[in-house]
Image (cartoon, rainbow, N blue to C red; front, side):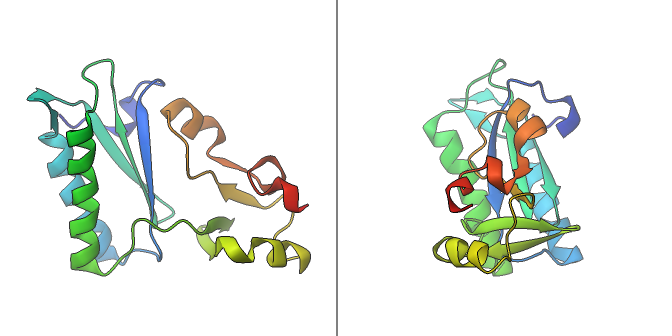
Length: 159
């Protein structure tokens, strides 16, 4: 069952899907409609999941499940992954992008993982640049630490 994202409790589990490019307005609308329909009827072993999603930076989708209501199972997680695979095929978007996302205003600059060190050395990434932490698992960490300075992240060793 879908609920508004801001009503998700701090202990809710999250999955972050970073796209390889920004969404066009019609794509964002299609993504929202697909995810609202999907979360409305999302179940784990026949039990409804209390779930939500939000789109950030017009390029990142965060899906959340309140596991104190019912826990997501492997099959239900697979079902949510299928939503993104189907959207990817229809919209020609890679939702499983793992490049480093650096925030530049309201736009994400994606830097291939293999190029992080050279971008730091060239001064294209500074210690205070804000990046996304892609492996955030709980909504409380998402709300408080998903966006962080580069020198406090997994790329800090490059400074």
